[in-house]
Length: 112
Image (cartoon, rainbow, N blue to C red; front, top):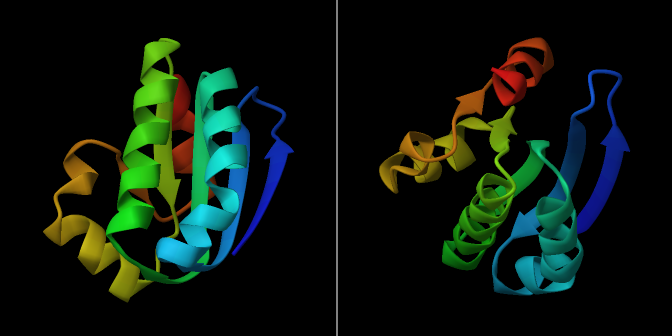
């Protein structure tokens, strides 16, 4: 699992995850992801390159969303593939962390 972050012009940070967000993948990036989430108020998590998500990946995302919320900010998910989106929707994660298909809408949502 790879994690890359980029600061966007609107003040948000986009975190791009690439790989399988399972026990192994989440373990490889959880510390860095948690540090980013704890230090940001506007976080967009790009899941477009995530092929699989398991409970540990969901846990990591929820903990990150909670950390951002603690800083009075917002975290959203971007571009999840259909299989990953289906898992997140079945687990009702989309009720806690909004999901968007395009960057412009996601960027507006973290500031709205």
